[in-house]
Amino acid sequence: MANEVRRVKRELAYKGRIIDVYKDYMEFENGNTSVWDTIHHDGATAVLPILPDGRLVLVKQYRNALERDTIEIPAGKLDTPDEDPQACATRELKEETGYLAANMRHLLTIKTTVAFCDENIEVYLASDLRQEGQQLDENEYVEVLEMTLAECKELIYSGKMQDSKTVAAIMAYANLLHDQEI
Image (tube, rainbow, N blue to C red; front, side, top):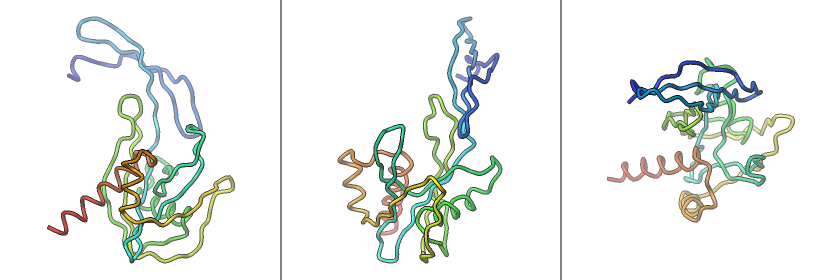
């Protein structure tokens, strides 16, 4: 399939603080052409923190694109494209929740919106947590929540929790627990 489609030209349409938007001029094996919009993102990490009693640590924050609060796992953009993802996840966990994790384990990798964006998120599982106090950025307002896995799954199935990285992380974790019980 890749041989049937090729990019012949790329133009930067918008350079943002977090994303860059490109106009990609595409050519197809049959001779047709098209212009596709593509968003570049340097990447991010996310972390699913697990308390000793099994509850999950989540954050509630306002998301401008949705014009409402969402419940998500802690996450953040890599400071540079070559930043170590686990270091970023550790930093974001501390900033947003105040927790440090003695154990951090890679859970999964997701591509958020493959049709038009190249964003990659490395998701980690954090355990053996120690509370040290939040260190929020100047314009960051985050409420820390603690929920059971069952409560999270109910929010997912009822459509009240829709953030893709959060849904993927929680369901991967639930599957991991299920596999360990067998």
